Length: 352
Figure 1 (cartoon, rainbow, N blue to C red):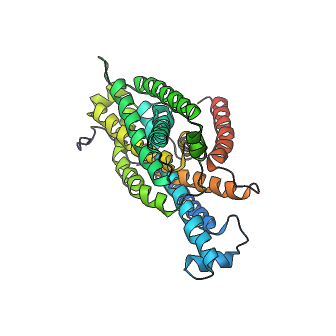
Figure 2: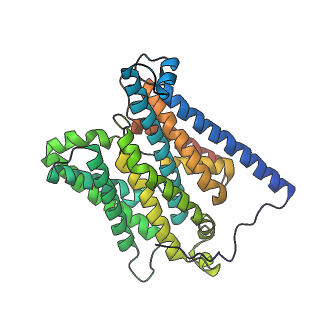
Figure 3: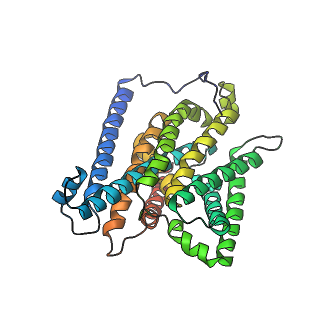
């Protein structure tokens, strides 16, 4: 669904004062540092993991030299899973920012629209009905389920005299998510084999993910991430409220629909690839607001940098924290919960 290309009547003004220009320069410096951290963690991900492989072994394997076992572990395990963590981080960081902007709710999370539950339900149905067990089949079923759930939520949430509103979308998403989750869990109880097949996906893990998963999601995630930049001035307008945004010439309903489609693509592909990853889409925009403020000109693109930092860093912790590798979804929950508690305490303490 296309968005009107006409510019809103009022855009956030560019910095004009020396202090504002200095603030923008410092923001640019912080962004460059964050990009450097993301790139550095990505390269560390190529060299760190289970197995007695030295940095030299990993380096040679990256250039297709060394023994076959090392090549298999480095090139077909560590490299694709690290790139997949980076892509999922981009997707969840962008989806969380868009979701919070569309609903004007700082506690909104992409999963609140029922996307995760829809993906889970479709994967269970695919396993029980069609006997699908492969990763590619799971991803196809998960993306389809995420789209169907999101479409249902938007259709129901936009009915009525008041049309689409953030409150209706959130309430509809919570209700639909509960229904899909309940039916999905019920099917796994009736068919225990399907539960055994899908349980590793439920906890959100990068273990066993490789180039097929990267090939399946990278185009969708990067295309949706780039297209989401078009929404930046409109999200800033929506922050003023629907009435004021309409008065400024913003097509509120079309913007909300376009944003809804984009965050569904982002969150649906990420969920289908790894499983439900908690707290990243909720936590990342909050962290970025502390550093850059609420302006989406900074908030959205920087969230696409901080998201990969969180995901790749969590994957590194998952690899080395214990003798047996932890699911990355468990690590993000361990990291995200304390961070959110700290953010809430900080906000309450400053009176914001």
